[in-house]
Length: 205
Image (cartoon, rainbow, N blue to C red; front, side, top):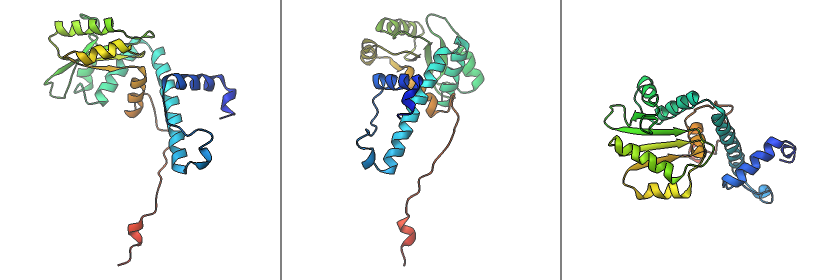
């Protein structure tokens, strides 16, 4: 850690993590008393949050077309949209009445979900959500997903909880976590398998 402190990128990452993320990592005083499993978990969480931060920064730098593709890839991996062709066409409908896309909720197309995907820097506030809700009203839709690379204000989150329509808010941090969990924009570097003693094997009959 002392060696990494020499690099501005690592110091920026630590500042970002402290401001935005609460992670239960062992402090320096408890490292000596931590088990190997706890230390592995701590290191894993540290690497994951750094990857999450790096992912989000790359997404913010991407073009609108690439961000559109990213949203399609993520929703498909989450089980929405049916085929890639259908999902791509659905999300490709931009700018109609404040809606960036429409995607099937299931492979049979029994219901649809309207999408708002914004590659923004500024927080998304309640007025932005209200505009999205108004767009859903115009489409007679009850379900929507608002995805942004920034954050949602507290008022926006509270507003979504009080309305009848089912609206899912995905901010930048959640977006990067979902990308990691679904293998979007990441590749496996290494894997460790932890074995333990199998007591059942040593039972003599």
